[in-house]
Image (cartoon, rainbow, N blue to C red; front, top):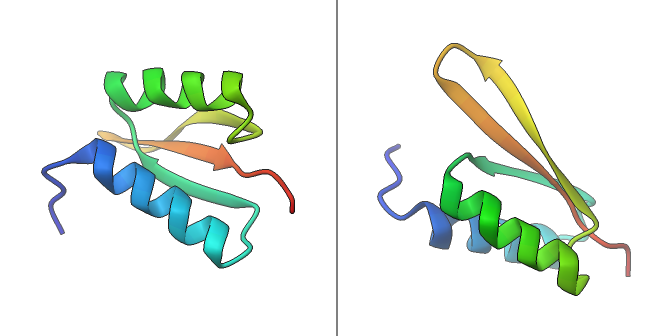
Length: 68
């Protein structure tokens, strides 16, 4: 599945994970996603995020969500 809009995909994954009471989710890495995640972390909407290298040419960001 190809994702044309990485930002909206990331925000939808965060929203869906939060609605499903998950503590973690992942998304594709991009500079825009990293910058938006930094703002979300500073504002307290997410706990943390980290850069994961899974396999060749596949970079994922692991996003830690706050507990309710």
